[in-house]
Image (cartoon, rainbow, N blue to C red; front, side, top):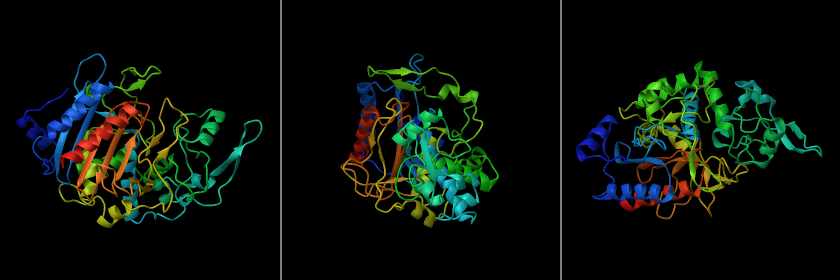
Length: 411
């Protein structure tokens, strides 16, 4: 468990480049501390770190639990987590920078810039022997399809057809290859979570002439002061990495071997970054500032942020995931009973959460139970990070829900 004196906390905020945000009343920090501390104790979650911020300051910061199961080393807001699909928001920002520069449009066929996307086929089903039946796609994939997850690409974790295809071809759980996997539907006709943002990352690399690591560091992380976010985890930062846990059949969380991740050979726009809550909050604050850094420099135009934050999928429903690999993910419904939309990189709830985020809030998550939301109506953002599988497990969703309610009860 990590705690701070008032002077230490002020110094911590200064190291984040911010002053305390005027958001909460007296005693609110203690209430949120209690929610996180008792939440992980009651649920047996090894570690959690969280930050709540306004556009220009940190309103709350807390971290509880230990880095691993044996060392007793406490976590802090500078502890490093695998953020998995929270990488997608950063890739989406990079892709929209390409749009602003006139290098690509949202609605043109991506095959012009990524020729392999001109070869995509649609999985129609399986023959009596279990062999996939494929046909050419009739519609081209656009950048808008990729950023809204309406391209037809699906992950095998949450789609039965893709699971059967990957099992048949021996590619179950593999990362995206150079040749695109089959689509599960015609582009633009459905919402389904999948390999879409991975291809948006390939687009950024093709248009910029840089790797994603190089592009992110130069054009997003350095301007925002994000010093602990990268696809690489250098040896000197390994001590700060929070260990990964897996929930077993008996409900207990068991630690995976604690080893430093190997450097990636390719970079994945859909996942793969390591970060801290102290770093990631800077991306969310940039969105709250309509595209500006803390120093006033522009990463995105204000109208670009507005476009990203607007529902782009019409009457389709987003954010509901039926798992076919329960060891990796539980079934997930981020907003039970409601139809949510999707912008250019973000889930958007059309209706407010009871006791929580406003209508129109931007949000998404990472596979090892990291979550964030950006509530532009209330002028706040929040990120909470844990590190265990399965994604969307009731342990994690329960703590996320309790923390969100504590945040809004304190505003």
